[in-house]
Each structure stands twice: as structure tokens, then as C-alpha cells.
Image 1 (cartoon, each protein chain N blue to C red):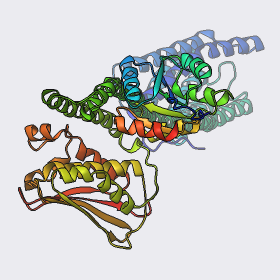
Image 2: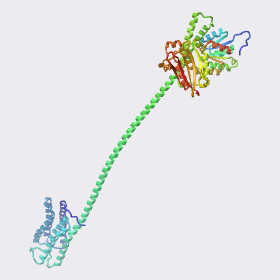
Image 3: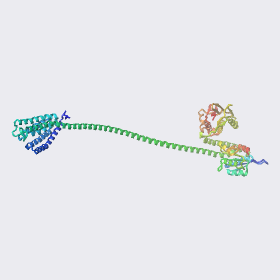
Image 4: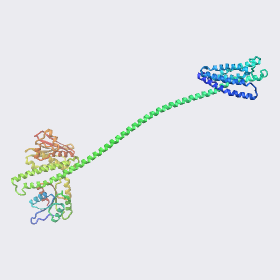
Length: 503
Length: 128
């Protein structure tokens, strides 16, 4: 492979020159060795000229080095030319000491090698040419007895005429050397160059590989950063989720605590309610107990069991009786409140009940009371009025209350009637009177607990204001409803309620 | 066991009631109506009196300390010596359930306090 010499940079020239200088320095011991060998082999020649050659080669190399350092050797081809000129000088000088061929050879070798190294085989060969011309020229001059210098010999110790063949062989050998030198150098350089090329190429490769590796590393670095960023995001959202979970946990615990508190409150409430109910029940029983003898004796007084009662006693006894009844009414009211306030918990014992029979019975029982106020009472039920599934006790109370109210709030000479009709799967009943009526604004209020139209009036009539609410509850507990109707104050009232037929 | 009416003998009514005022009332009422009334102020004493005195009718209160009237009624009916004596329960408790319990225990009748004296006398007349 030829040495690539497309573009020879300054740097390359300098490098080559340095190399040739190094080679020159290397020649020095080589030359000395050769001198020694030749001398040992018996060749007798003047040592001085050889040594002078060596010295001058050395000097030449040093000069070139100096020039290089001084940047005078811009184009190192001058090196070859310079060596040529200097070698001529040397020749002239050596010539005077007797040896011709030697300086030529040494300097020539140096020059050719240097030139080849610097500029390639072609130029090396080109430089070899003048050397060869000089060599052969010197020989032929000697052969034709043209002595350039009286004392110089072409090859010291060997007369050209006496040993023509030997000298010609020698010359040929040197010629071959000069020709081969560039070639060999070139080859060597080529190899070196190849190696250098390969080295450069592999350097390039490794540089490329390094660059790729670097870029990959950069990509990896970027990917790593990206991943880290993502991991951080995940970490953040994980932490956020954890916080959320904690919040949810806390909220759950709060909710649980609230639920427990609520349950506890509810339980407490139930207990209190039960206590209230029991209290009311006990109280009502306790309060009723003394009323038994009170009412009993008063009755006996009034009925004359102990004899005729004087007028004053009679009047007093009658008042006591009324008050005792009133008191009993209040106490019963208390019991009702405690019982019915439980609402739907109240047992409704539904059994077949004939409203007709119940109404007739009640009207009969209350007959004396109606008669006392000259109030006419009647029952208006259609013949096919159905038997209901209802709680008799409760309906008895309901009717008793309504009839009692009608009696209370109807003036003397009025009327009270119980009427009813069937409407599909329920019945509609009413207790009507032509009494003091109800103002339209009070139609709903009458069912409020403790509502009293006129407390003085109702106190005289006897009542605590619980009758109607209780009636309404009874109707509702059966699955029906109750309401009041009136054409206005003084125009009577109708208390209506519905009950399901089938219960 | 009802006493045979030989020479006009007053019917004997035992009042078992712990509230003294009510006992007084019932005794007055019964005696004014021509009965012989005796009182026992507790269930235990009532049982003893019933066995010893053998009344024609027992007026029995329910709400008594130590022994409830229902318990007394059960025992009266369980004891052959007293099982034939009619029992009328005179009680504050007015609920239907209470009446049912009373009847189940063997009472012949049930009246609620405070009662109309006339009503009580009617029942006594009916069952004694």
C-alpha cells in the first residue's frame, strides 16, 4: 500500500522530518559498528574519513533539527536538497582525505530515506537518482583517470583499474540499495501508514463508538431523569392517596363515632321514653286510687245511703262529685298521653266490629245525659253498612269522646247524630251536631294536643284538651284519617273520619 | 259455696284490698246494702280469711304489694276449700288485657275503680 500523500500538512512534514533526524542519529552507532566490522574483516581504510562522515552526518541532522525548530524548514523537501548539497561539500572535503564512496553512501542513504519518509517513494527515488549519478560519475571519472582530487580514491585500498569488477559489484550493490531504500522505506512506511491508518480508523471507530456510547448515556440519563420524575409523581400521588385514605379512615371513624353516639342517644331516648311512660302510668294509678273512696262516698251521700242529705250538704256533695269527675278526667288524660304518644307501637286489636251495635249501645248509655240537656240523638247508618275489622276498645273511646264533645258544645234543645256511609274499601263516619261550631281557622288546630277553644268554657265542661288528638290517633292507627268540618261559629260541627273496611 | 237461705242470714262479702279508705268505702257500701262485710288488707290475709270465714263472695283488688290479686285468685281457685267462692275483681287497671288476665285467673266479674257504687252492688247481687 502506498503511503497516502494526498495532502501533506505542515504538521506531517515536521513529523516526518523529526523521524528522519531520529534515523540519522540512529545511523551513528550503526556506522560505527560497520566501521568496526569492516576493520575486523580486514578491510583497511582510513578511519579518519569515516569518522568525519559520521560526524558530518550527525552535524547535518542537527542542523536540520535546528532549522526545523526555527521554522525555517517550511518545506522539508529542502531537507533532501540540503543534504545533497552538504554531501557534496563533504565529498569535496573527504575527497581530500581519500575516500569517495563512503560519504556518498551514508549521506545518500540518509537523504533518500528522509525524502521517502517525508514525501513518499517516488520522491525518494527521485533523490536517489542524483546520488547514483554522482556515484557512477565519480567511478567513471576515476576509471578514466580524471582525478578530482590527487589523494582521493573511489574506494580506498581498491584501485579502480585493478579491481574493476569488485568495484562495479560494489557500486551495483549500492545502486540497488539506493533504489530499494525508498521502496523498502515506502513499504515500511506503508505498513506503518497502514497501521497508522488502521489505528486512525480504529481510533475513529472507537471515537464514534465513544460518541455513540456518550449519546446513549445521555439518552439514558434523560430517560433516567424522566423516570425519576415519573417515580416522584407516583410517589406524590401515592402519598396523596395515602393522605386521602387517612382522611377517609378518619371520616369513617368520625361517622362510626357519630353513629355510636346517635345510637346511644337513641337508646337513652328510648329509656327516657319508657321511664316517662311508666312514670305516667304509675302516677295515673296512684292518683286514681284516692279518687275511689272520694267518689264512692260522695255517691253514697247523694244517693241517701246514710240518710236524707240536707240541702247544703247535697249541693256541696254535688260539687265535690263534679270536681272529682273532672280530676278523674284529667288523670285519664294523662294515661292517654302516655299510651297513645307511642303512636304506631300501640297494639290495634282488629276484630269484627259492628259500628251500628257500638253506636246504638253508646247512645243508649249516654241517653240520660242527652235527656238532661234535651238534646236529641240519632243514628243514621245505611242498612248495608259493613262490619269492620277494628279495635273495639279504641273505637269505643273515639265515639265516647266525640259524643261527649258534641254533648258539651251543643246548647240545650240541639241535636247530635252519628252518620256513616261506605266508600269503596273504606267507610266514612261522622259525629255531627248543631252546636257552637268551629271557626275556619281552628279546623285543624282543634286536633292539636291541649288545644282548647275557650279554656273557661271547657274547664266547666270538664276536659284537658286531649280528646280530639286521641280520636285522630285512633283513626290513623287503624289506617284512616280524621278531620273537622264546620259551616262556621254557631253553625254546628261535623267530626268526620274514615276507617278501612278490611282492617 | 252459697249459704242456704234458712232464717234470713246476711250474705258474707270478703273485701281484699290494701288501701284503707277504699276498704272503708266498700264496707260502708256493702253494709248499707245489707251485707256482712269483712276486710283483709293483704293477699296472704285474704287467703287465710277466705279459708276460715268462707264468704259468699270475694271482692278482690289486684294491685297489692307482696302478692298480686291475680296470684290470690289463682290460689283461691286452686284450693278446693275456696274454689267455689265467686271472685269479683275490683281494680284500677282498666286495660282489656288486664280484664282478660283477671277472667283467665277465674274471676266471675271485673269492675274498674273508681266505680259507681250502684254498679258494684249490682255485681255483688248477681254473683254472691
